[in-house]
Length: 195
Image (cartoon, rainbow, N blue to C red; front, side, top):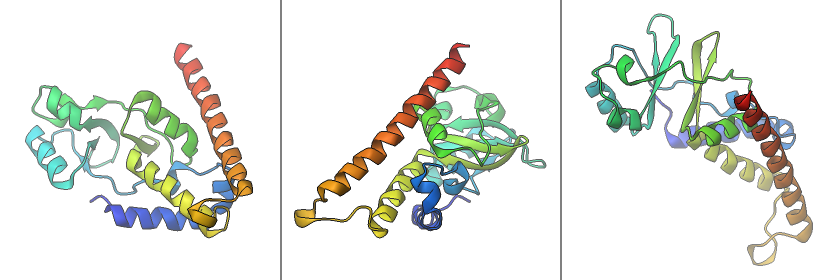
């Protein structure tokens, strides 16, 4: 059963608060903010059951795993359910999805999600599902980073709710570092795709 949004937000905030060094060094890992118990279905699950689970749990994707081994078989998005024909998960899933190890850096994972227009990325070790990183988790991580920065005094509201010029300069410098890393990572992914 998937985490509720409030629980996920609190867990991510706890993780970020305990890993401020990694956060400031832009070295957060996907494992720090992943959903550890994603909702899964077997390859034999019916499309009707998949629709029901997605509607009841308000999910945009389901991971398809082999029940006995937890080996990742595929991913089913809400778009797949609407546009593909078939009666089972195996027939409508995207097989052999891109999966990352849980110790992957959050920055490159974020870039992959954005470049490929994914809503989630499975996390696996030796082919076995360990969790999933979603756009929601990334948005919550950003929210958590901002809260931690405010808590440690890096961002403090000044007069009229603004920030001091020094704080704004530091924030812009940090954002510039993140953006530069995104561009380098994006170039590496584009180069790998062209190879």
